[in-house]
Image 1: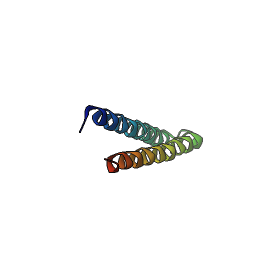
Image 2 (image 1 turned 90 degrees about the vertical axis):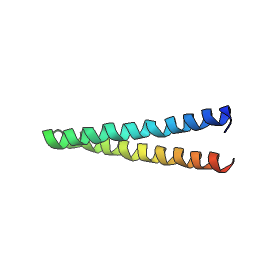
Image 3 (image 1 turned 30 degrees about the vertical axis):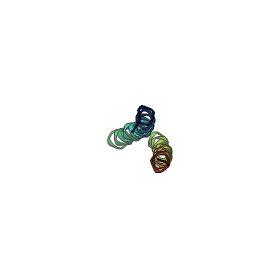
Image 4 (image 1 turned 120 degrees about the vertical axis):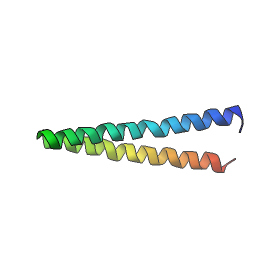
Length: 71
């Protein structure tokens, strides 16, 4: 694999990790909402963010798949 390909793969992996980190953070928020009887709306907002981050991660993984398939 060339240096340019390594850089591209590294960037794509970073792009996939970013939404995974948001998923983890928002799951923790939901846990806090449930454990501390916080407003339901906070939990629903966190769920929306998790769903969006999952979609972003899926899109990034699709891009990785296409990039690796083109080689």
